[in-house]
Length: 266
Image 1 (tube, rainbow, N blue to C red):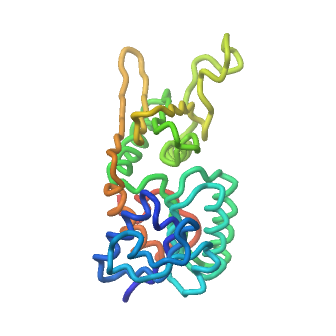
Image 2: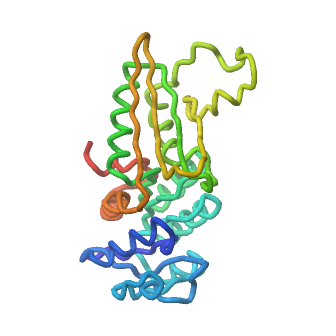
Image 3: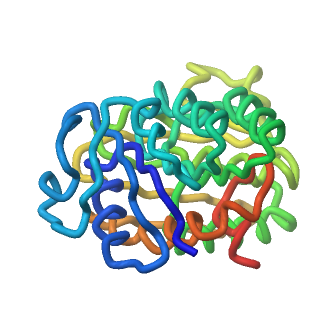
């Protein structure tokens, strides 16, 4: 059975790499895409890939006039929520690659997904090395209560922390809040220097030229520390395999699920 797919953000950095890879698959077919910049064109003409013959639309509402099984959102946080809810209400399962959604957004998405009996798989990062970092961090958090997250990205990234850092903090919150020796209210000096409390963990977001995407979590114990760090390269290729895995498995879910390991059997 071929999965009919609508891809929002198909001409962006991650979306275009995913689209080119889908052209080589036999079980996934792109039936429509969304890109306000290139609306009205054929995707293959924009990406120089003749096998991609679907049209590009300016909005997800227009794109979904072509029935699909799965909607993938690779856009921006200010429109992703709308796209996801629209997809669910049109009967599609949804894979979310957009970062910056809030816990309130996720709660609403989960409620709509369950009402529509559809699955949503939200991944702050589709790279398999990120999935392993998250799992290793969950193991460490069971034994080491003190931890902080450092989130690195290029200077033009508008959302902070990144979806990867948010997802990591959320997953660790299910184990428990991080221990803090000196409460923030007792700090001397600007409290913002201690970062933001995200799902019970202090997170520090660095935005500088020279970085692509990187997430580091530091666990501290007396006279010892554990550092787990993920580094991304300059291409979007590491995210493709995870995204394809999510597309192929999201229909087995009902409601919102966070993290690619949901469908990896880890």
